[in-house]
Image (tube, rainbow, N blue to C red; front, side, top):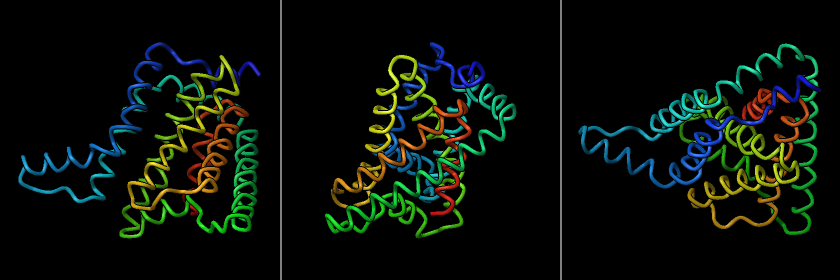
Length: 231
């Protein structure tokens, strides 16, 4: 228990401040302003940056920033991962079973009740990878999961867990869901129904549980990477 508590330790003042800024950038800045900045850079440099290359640049920068901010968290989480490798793998496996089981139940329930036949996670991943699946693989399967787990589980959940565990689950789930609902709307997917919202609430809850259960951020990272790779 002591090791788990240390691995999911409360954030330092620097992590709280810098992590909050990075989270705001990820939620509010990137969806609306990143393309404008690239367009402005293209105008100044006289050459355009392809959309897929833009995405890779953005996520590499985000990963480097997140790794720098949460360096202590990553080091401690890695130490605990190797100290309790079998327990972490078992929790990751159970998380995958929970994810697919709950997701399938929700999908089938709302298919019958509301006629909703869309899986939000698969829809977004398909939209991201449709034009160039190989080029999108690095972002969707590696970079994005690590960045998002550091922000939504490592930062949001970790920030609130010591104060109120229910609040930690609620805030991390709602913010993560809001991010993807916003992305779906920006992609022109239309206003999603309650079924789609609940699908992402389920995803986030399972990822938060896997972090809470094992105390290492690498558990939700592993689960997230696996889910995206399979999708």
